[in-house]
Amino acid sequence: MAASLPAAILAPSTVPTAWASPAGGYKIVGYWHNFDNGSGFVRLRDVSPDFDVVNVSFAEPSGAAGNIAFTPFDYTEADFKADVAYLKSKGKKVIISIGGANGQVQLTTTAARDAFVNSVKSIIEKYGFDGLDVDFEGHSLYLNKGDADFRNPTTPVIVNLIDALKNINGYFGTDKFTLTMAPETFFVQLGYQFYGGSCISCDARAGAYLPVIHATRDILDWLQVQNYNSGPITGLDDQYHTMGSADFHVAMADMVLTGFPVAKNANHFFPPLRQEQVLLGLPANNNAGGGFTPVAEVQKALDALIKGKQLTSYKTRGSATGYPNLGGLMTWSINWDKYNNFEFSSKHRAYLNAIVPPTPDTQAPSAPAGLLSSAKSSTTVSLAWNASTDNVGVTGYTVKYGSVSKEVTGTSAQITSLAPDTNYTFTVAAKDAAGNVSPSSGPVTVRTAIASTDQTAPSMPSNLTVTGKTSTTVSLGWSASSDNVGVAGYAVAYGGVTTNVSGTTATLSGLNPGTAYIFSVTALDAAGNRSAAAVVSATTDTAGARPWALAVSYKAGDEVTYGGKTYTCRQPHTSLQGWEPPNVPALWLLKA
Image (cartoon, rainbow, N blue to C red):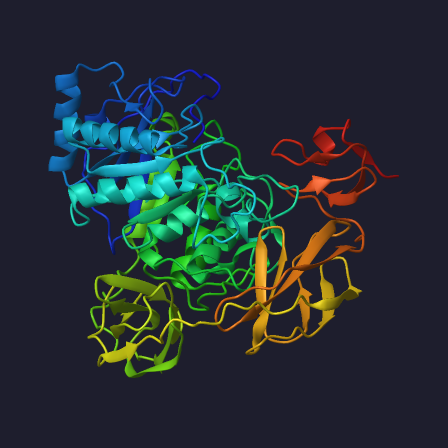
């Protein structure tokens, strides 16, 4: 959120008096300023009734690492509590938001995590808030080098935040507690191109919200990505989309509703969120942030997303007929909306209320059938089953054994870290986008194998060579390794990315043009023994002029296109918002 913006003279306005209720579950969420930046101060009880959720902005770091504090602005404590209670009596949710442009929060240690948990619980209980909105910006979240898999993060600021959110949610209870997030596109959709822990020379913050969203998706009420203050972002059509237009909002929402391969790695697919978990984040007027989108253009995007009226410039990938259960809209901010004579809240409330509510999906999928064990070792069991059916569509499955559960999207799963020579009983249940869960499958009991006595590693792969390359791919080949029992496969790695193959060739894709990489190949056997690594280096071919983008490491001489013109890089740098070629002649030379 843009917490510090140019001051302006408060425009006269009148607060609507009729309390509106959302039709079809379409929410309008607004951020309320706990400060006055020229947009004007608004008492909570005077917030436009067209808002369904009020995010109090912001609680911020104070004192020891991880500690969060909140003091109401221009309020006595008693009056603030009374106004929170008043909004709640009208059926509104009031949520405390942490972060904003000036509220960097880094939970680098478990002590900071615990301080965060305790202070946030205290604030919520003290003022009677309904939940927590995570609005971490700046350098709050980042990924350490080699932290390449969003499903299994290792960076402390990520792991500790996930633990903290689960702890707070568990303390208040999922049914009573509302958890939301408001990241910028840089931290979510940019992850389709770049992932901070795995890409070379890109910003370590790229896509850094993805592991947090993924780990909390079962308790996350909604995600409201800020579709403003953003550079051009590549959509699932592999085209750049620019903020302020309908196709930008449709493309950004479609990415999280369809899912996408993180850093274009097919092995690291970010699963889609449920429709009701996705809201569009928008500025209320031109003062509120870059990328203001006129009402008509916003509603064109909503026509495409909710009603399936496809745009000519972007077609939704996840559903050709739209997402009728989309969560709704978020805006920065309630104060700027009042300053702008309630244009955002009143016109979009009327639009959303006019939509015929979709019929709620209450039908659960059928129980998965045919559960069986397809393979096992001393520490792993591979499972497979027949797909369930559903009146709308199955979105995934939950595999359970003992007190452990594992979420998967397909009809197979590999369960790891098991004890040797031990019986495990597995069941599988299907779920749909509405959260309906099927009955469990019939159970299957599998006994893991006795621990292997094979401690001999395969020989190192020999004759590792680069057999081909392009600007974005490198192909490798090598001679087979030998083993006293048998080689089970090979692990091909570069940076923090690892790909497992069964043969003696591999093609690595999604690489950066004109970039040097070091590749290693390691042989594996069934007992988990690994050979020494064979290593080879290769530099991808240089591509022609490509569209300028955020978080790219440019070298002197690189060519990009922007606004229909071609520019040449004058000095090495990593692109940031505001460093668009026309804006920084010290970095970019307009090509004649």
